[in-house]
Image (cartoon, rainbow, N blue to C red):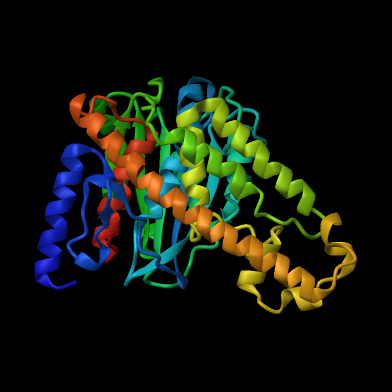
Length: 397
């Protein structure tokens, strides 16, 4: 990044931090500007998805008795976090997104340190959502050093130096509890270019006194404090209904295959319902995430995504792997149907991108009117740090 671009982008970051919204930033490169035509904002430029570069995020959530509010915030902010991650580009390419989930501090866990890997690093975001909604709190001992060690050593972190690797740990007990020294663990994670970010559920002073700030400092990450009992504030927009309508159309472009294809397609609908159960706005955030090719991938059960990843796959697919609507059809007929569904999906995703940009502009305007009074929560803490660390690692918007 040359000096002029760096200064321009740094100024944008400062504006973002003061406003509290990622979409207030504008890229200084005019080829990335949005086109405004007859009052409508054009879709984002179509970026190539990188084959090598990844952004990997491990969420380490305290599920002890007092953390019901934290888990509720995580459910509400999952798709906002995904959408923030998808705004980042590296050398004009969109990195692949992977998310892992751990719980710790729960007496119901059999592990001696009360730790459980809920999901490994995965692009299956429906799985992450499913497991997140299944979390339950219970009294326990919170050993931050132990769970950071578990995540930093046992996850499949990418070896590409251009990939960005982030740990976010959230909780409300002293950071230095347990037999595992958090300083040693975080130092080893840092040596692997894994950033450790800490989110203390309580006052800032207490978070500093109980070593949460120190953990972030040692891990080259960010320290935040939040009110975990704060309810996420939603802002309804004129674009929400149309985006929701597109979600149903988007789901119709998925063609299940394989022994678990039907089950996975049903899971997609279930996670739509889970998001909607949180609020209509969160359901819209999920739909926006589903329009991002570098984030929402389902080649393990969707024939459209699979054919895009492996163009020769349909020629070798077995009859028993096909859904009922494709059984008995020739490979040429299947290819034609998959191509049609792929084209439909591309069109719908572009429409969602346009509406999502308009929606975010509306939300930004409303927040400015309110003086950005929505407050800090888990999602907003992660959102802010993603941009700062991304800039540090050569990413741009």
